[in-house]
Figure 1: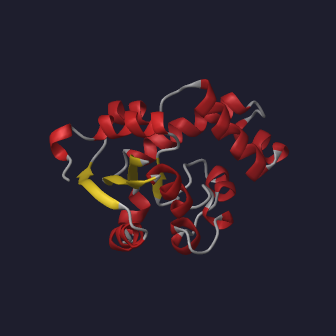
Figure 2 (figure 1 turned 135 degrees about the vertical axis):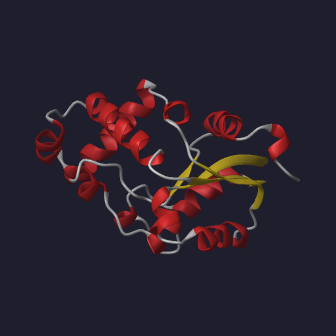
Length: 180
């Protein structure tokens, strides 16, 4: 099934001059870029991009608990409640994504969402497999970012589901900004 998904090259990917390498990886995997622009996201856009649904917030909190451990999480966040941790992480993500421009891409192809997620690699760059974008180019870790009370600098964001991809593509791009 042909799908479209959003990929954001985050501020750390731009700062480290990895735009070309990330785009090459996408194209080498027979995925087509049908939209591309550099955007300086404001808080309103960032809040819409990182919605505060319980599922996403708790998911982020649980991922952090598994990476940092409960004791360390309690020390950093003052709680082990995944929702409270997730809300803090959301704030860190909003601050990070608005700190400098990002490159927004719309990627299209057969099973594009699943393929892009696999190509991006695991959220935590130090745990990502070699051959993935985060595994080959990533230098940060969830544990280090948590200790420094900031978002993990993991190079890219990729939509996690068909619903999320549809919402995010519409959020970042007008239909006339996409090309075939």
